[in-house]
Structures are given as C-alpha cells and as structure tokens.
Amino acid sequence: MKFTDSATVVDLENLSAFLSEMNSLPEYHIGYCGTNQEEIYNTIIKDPELLKSFIIVKKGEKIISALGYDFYDETIELWGPFIREEYNTEMTTTLWAKMLTKLPKEVKYILGYCNEKNFKCITWLVDKKFDLSGKHTVLQIDPQSHKDSAGFHLLKDEYFKDFVVLHNNLFPNTYYTGMQILNKLDDNNAVLVETIDSSLVGYAFVTQDSLKNGNVEFIGVNPRYQKKGIGYKLMNGALDWFKLKKSREVILSVNANNTQAINLYKKVGFTIKDEMCSYRFKLEK
Image (tube, rainbow, N blue to C red; front, side, top):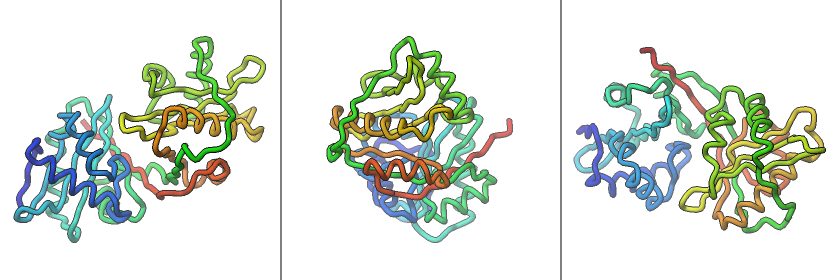
C-alpha cells in the first residue's frame, strides 16, 4: 500500500471518480460528500485546503481508501474514511495518525456523518473513540414538482433579535448559532418566518449551493405555537422559495426519533432518502 499524505490537482480526477463511485452506495456513504463526480471535482478544486487535506491510499495504481476533511471555525467534517476493501486495522490506524498531524491548530472537534449501513466507517469511528451524537433521517424532494403555493415571508431586521433568541433556545448545541445564521444571509441563504400578532413564532433557514442543490438547514416553531399548522406553512413556503430559485433537489435531515416532524415532511411531499449516524470527537490539547 502507498500513502499520499496530501492530494494535489494531479490526483483530483481519480480521487473524485473514487469518491463518486463509493459515495453512491449506502455501505460506503458519507453524508458530507456528494455523489456526482463533476460536483465533487468542482467542490474540491475550488477549495485548495480541502484538496490538501486528503490522504489517499493506493494498491498499485488503484485507490483503495481516502480520507479528507472540511474545516470551519473550530470544527472539521470528515470526508471519509472511504474504505474499498476489507477493513484493515493497520491501514485505518495510519489514516487516523496521518490526519491528526495535518489538522489546523484551531481544531477542537471532529465530526463524522455516515450512512447507518456504512459499517466500515462506523467501526473506524467507534475504534477511534468517537461518541455517537445522533441518528438522522434524510429526506428529499424535487421542488419543481411542488404544487402548493403558500408563499413565504423573509426575515426582516425588526425580528433579528427575536430570531436569534428562538433559534438558540430551540437548538442550543447545534452547528450554527442564530447570529452565525444572520451573518450568512444572502441571495442563496435565507430565513423564512411566520408571525402572529407581530410576534415571531416560527422560521426556516434554507440554503442553495452553486449547483442549485437546496437544503432546509433548520426549521423551528415556538413551543407555545406548535401543532397549529405553522410548521406546515413554513415547509410549503420553503418549497416555494426553492422553486423560485430553480433548485434541482431539496434535502433535509431530522432526528430519526422525531416521527412528528418526519410525518410533516412526508405530508408536503418529501420521501426518505437515507438513515444516517452522526459522531463527535473532542480533541484533547
């Protein structure tokens, strides 16, 4: 086996083909990586640090394993490990050791996100002492097929403070704070809201990437106003927003035990795509 510690543009064509092939199958699927080779190639080529993060393992000229990461704030999201052949403890231990030497000094947390059928990745994460942080159901829809037209209301400045408070109360330990979401707002990142008597009672944070893939990052309703159809209005409004933006596909993830939310999403037309597991590792400095 031959290890390449930092991938370069020379490796990218073969690497993107390998990632596309592997990630298209549930037993190798990693949630942070896409499945279309062109999209994977374009994502990596635009991010030199993501490209350099990849460690590639070859047998002869054939890639048999790869591991990379995407870095933001104090956290990295793992693109892998992708393991083509039988689980090899020596190889996977070397992957882990090599990755640790490459991490930016600011990193405090390492996140893994893989399909529940990806037993090789789960074995690796558990072996490296990652903690299981959640199980998630991923749903999908083609927004262009959406028929309902509830309309949507964009978040206005006057509700910024109320939004931050509501989001942080509903999702106290998540990956974006309310203020971080506000800082991301632009043409392709929006907060849609529902109000009652001039009070903010619910919101959806929706995003679209450069390839027109949509994502419902968060949807939240004030507990006092739940079970009043507000979530349904927000979801229909979100699909109207995606339809207007000409999104190709919309994805969302929800706690696998949240049957109420899953039934809501199915009601507006979503279907289940994957069942995923998230893992978290805290680096000891």
